[in-house]
Length: 254
Image (cartoon, rainbow, N blue to C red):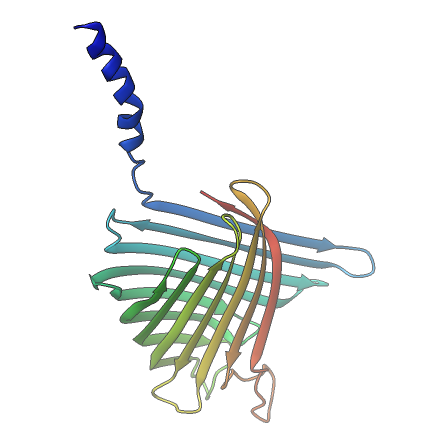
């Protein structure tokens, strides 16, 4: 090989390496954790943990998502706040920004009157905004719920199974490369009882500490227009309609 050809190959080598793009990221994992413990005149322990795992095909036509969140607080030996929620979801692209999705979920809120609740939902989601710094997703669906109440709604009747709808939206605003704000809103009307509907809201702010570690501030609101009955009530008195959770902790993303 002549000297001129060697020089030409060396000159073209950096351009060839630059042209080789890194493979697209198809998996992500995020975990967050917060803990507070106080002792002395009173004993209070508060714990919040959560995670989100996403795996998708290279073309993002198929997306699998796993979620888990838990908030639990005890004061002087008694549980005064408890909210557990887990979800598995699969989205399938129908073309453009339209997706068909199915999900199954479980949640528990004993102080709120729910011993356990299972959910199965199918619906359509649409990516209304898909910009580098702004994302907005909208979705509608039909759901089935199987709920076990802490207090019986009628003598010996603890179960409440019903059909429902689902209307939801999720907005994400990127502030810098590693910091962002999210806001989700979910309305679930009970088709079997017009007075029964739930509204869930979650706001979050993530600020970076390092490349993979950040601070997370979250605010959750769980509204139930027809909450469960109070334990020991002889007049049919119901629990409060709204539960609020303000959380702060560390989040790690990979």
